[in-house]
Amino acid sequence: MKPIEQKVVGENGDCLSACIASILEREDVPHYLDEHWFLNYWDWLKEKGYSLHSRSKRYKPKGFYILVLNSRINPEWLHAVVANGNEIIWDPSPFKYSEKPLGERKYILELTKKLD
Image (cartoon, rainbow, N blue to C red):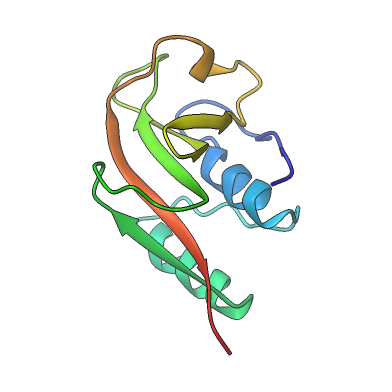
């Protein structure tokens, strides 16, 4: 895991792209905003040999994963951070939202390497 900060902050921030980039240790992850964002990331990751899975907020993944929660700045926004076990490992926001009390967990996104 290589910490990569998000470049866009606010309601349309790229925290999810930054989390994926951090886990994959690559800086060329696109930033998708439209209503098909999950499928767009799915397709992009598939080309790179990975799968993206949406999990229940109670799911306990092994290794690094993306935790999506309510933003502390605006509860109507979502914010993504990298976690491992029960611990937040990296908050890509320059404002370090995760250093404040966390917002409500919404769901977990897990990246898995596709087997050849």
